[in-house]
Amino acid sequence: MFEFTDDCRTGIEEIDAEHQYLFKLLNKAYVLATTDYQNDYYQQLKELFTKLDNYAEAHFAHEEEYMMKIRDPELILQRSQHAFFREKVLAFDFENIDDIEDQQRVLVELVNFLSKWLYRHILSSDILIGKLPPLEEWMIKENPCEFTEEYLTGIDLIDKEHEELFHIVDRANRLVKSFDASSSYDKIMQILDELKAYTKNHFEDEEEYMESIHYEGLEAQKRAHEAFIDKLENIDFEEIENNPEEYLQKLIEFLLGWLINHILHTDKKIPKNN
Image (cartoon, rainbow, N blue to C red; front, side):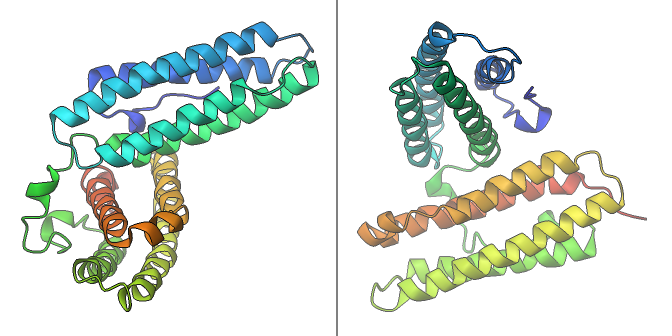
């Protein structure tokens, strides 16, 4: 069964309650998919698809309305992620599920998709709702990529690696701000590759440290790390080609916003090994 854990909470009561219900629907699918005996689940599947789509539509509308009200800079990105989810659920609904074996296959695929998407979406996107300044205020800072004392955890290795991550994002941000399609694209792609490689190494070091001190928040940290890496590994290159400057600016804002939020609200809870 899949648990809605504290690290999945946004702190926004309505959104958290709706996320919990989505987890209930996920667990209904999981129970059907893992039942030992074979049975005809045609009707249950159709009802599940309908509930998923209807509830997701209502939840996404509430979430986007809230984000619009607070001028959240991630609203456009959230809308595209929400649209992807609903398209995927609708695709499942059009699957041929007359045969029991097909039903079992669809159930397993549905559970895999829902569990992966929900955890990653909540931990990489929803957890930031209301925590980032509105975009206009965010970019007023002289250098939003500056690593300051407020980000220090007191753990030397982690702090040094966080500072280097800020430096890499800063280099990418400076290139995007002075974007020149003829010369900047390849350099930015190189920096993003460097960021991905360095981030993976940092997360491994951070997780190794947490494991060495038997930190109880390790599993939640691993899920958050996976969500961030997934974002880096699923960059939309077609969108970059169509509108490179705008897409890359939004990507940098997301990466920086996630990094800041993760350090301030998650990494700073990691105990020092005295």
